[in-house]
Every structure is written in C-alpha cells, then in structure tokens.
Length: 294
Figure (cartoon, helix red, strand yellow):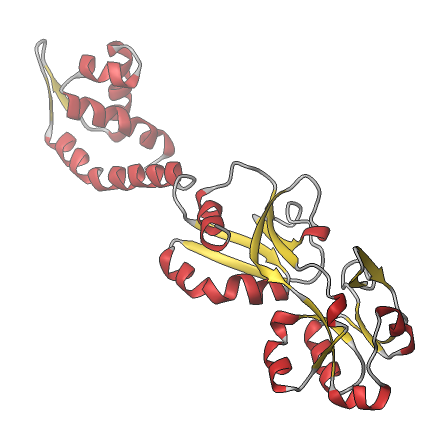
C-alpha cells in the first residue's frame, strides 16, 4: 500500500466508526464534502467501493468491513506508540548518562546502585567513570558528580554522598626509614606521592588546616601518579607519604598497614556534588536525585 493510501485510512476509519460523512467531519476538522471526496479518492485507488450510500445513510460494503477489521490492530499499535512518545518525558524511563569520578562511584553510587536498578527497570543507567573534568553538556551527559571546587560554571549542584575526610598516610616501613613529619611544612623534606589530574595535568595540592586558615601546599613530589589506586599501592609499599580520602583507607588504617600522620592539621571534610544544567529535569533524573541525594 502506498503512502497516499495510508494517509486516507484515518478518514475512512472515522467515517466507518462515526456512521457518516457529516459525523466524521467534525472530529476531522474538515467539511462533509471534503470527507466524501477523500473517501472517493481512496476507493478509486483501491478499485473497490467501501461504502454504500443512500440519501439517508452510509454503510460499509463487504470490502469496507474487511478493511476496517484489518486496520484495527495496526491503528491500536500506532496509538500506543504515540502515547508512548508523549509520556516518555513524564515517567522515569530512558537512558540516563552520569559522568563521575571513580571515587564518586565508589562512595556515592555503588552502595545503593542495585536497589535503584531494580526499582526503576525502565531506566538504562550509564555510569561513565572518568577522573578527567568532562564538559557534561558537550559530551551528552544528563549530570555529573564532582568535588565542589571542580564544578562547571552555571550548573545547579546538590550535595551527594558522605563528607570525605582527607588523611596523610604512610606505611610503617617508610616512617621507620624517614621519620614522622610533625608539621605540614616538613613535607618538603620527605618523599611525597602526589596525584596528577589526567585532564588538566595539574598536580593536586595537599590541603591542611593550620591554625584558622586552610593552606594548599605544593611540595616537590618523589612520585607522581594519575590513578588513586596506584597511589594506594605505592603508599603500602613504603614509597612515600600521600594524602588520601580516609573512606578508601579505613580498613588499612585499622589493620596498621598504613599510619595516619599530621592528623591535627586535617582540613575540613570535602563533599561531592551532583550537578546538571537545568532545573527542568526529566523524570529519570528526578528519581536519581531523590534516590541518591535526598
């Protein structure tokens, strides 16, 4: 069947179900004569009469009854497809793309991920773990999760996950060999392991609270790595001191595998933020925010 045939089928079905040309004209928004003309056009294309017409009534022919029955299911499916398209932005469904650091995934999302996936089966959640500072709008993400100091401009941000304490850690073997620093200024005399941001290539400063002020120090590193997991291994091997998020090292601290130093200079806890470009979030992002933020 050609496209021009298909375009006339809704007119045919309206006449067949409403009982006549005049009754069909109102819902279709055209005149009864225009309805009659379209039916004659469809009949000419098909080569059969679809309606028997008298001065008082219009009734389906055998061909018309078959065509009405055969188009019932396709038109129901089309209506369902249209309803689905209308409601896709009114219910939590579709692909939800979140860009986040590996640490954010570990402490903010993964502990509650299983229940979220089971609760919202129509959402396909894509977590892109990347320690680079990605432009979420340009890269097609719905939202991102980063530390407050690294958020993109003009974004709406919500706190997510627990407050994160920073701890200066070293292996006992390192402290036996090189001594224990008593003040952050002494780190210039120590072997320090530092993190380089993969995207900007800048070194992450070491942060301490000295008196009433926060100081960001830039000691000369002995070892530079761009993966937090590698830093953890290097510390355990006694290769130097490193400032780590305590939540990732609690077990090692309790077991004595690593030792915390300079604890009296610990800075205020850091906080991850979920951020996105607009207050008009689709339902899939709304339920993500309620689940992981609120």
